[in-house]
Length: 153
Image 1 (cartoon, rainbow, N blue to C red):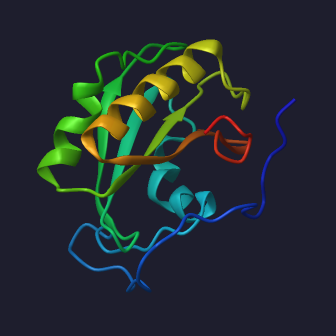
Image 2: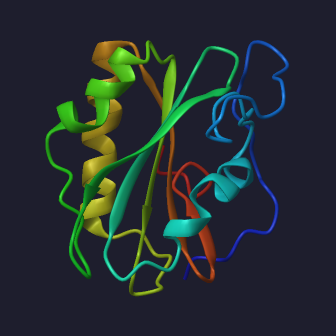
Image 3: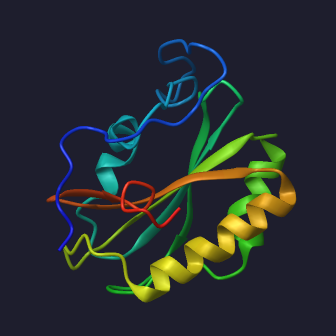
């Protein structure tokens, strides 16, 4: 069983101290140092009835460049398959790294076999492109599960 995390167990490396929130969208410039820092940026997708797959692009200082919905799936399945869907905007953003996020409408925080397979594929693709996948986070109303914290990254 996956436990609901209240505080981060690990942080991600960043090369600079980041600023606060800047830009009109309230997302750009937000510094991300751990999975908990991502949660406010994706709160509106926690309890959706369909599965949403999002990508947060980060600069070298660990600051958010952009947050995007990559795909919208069905009640229990995300439709992310080709890595190009995830990384096309990250390349345009000149991102140093990305954080992948998706919700589980079922409410379970346990990563599925498909979640783990997609994560492995995206980590490999990111490595080839020089864009590091820092984490893949599953969110629900109950909390979150970080695949990094669970040892899958």
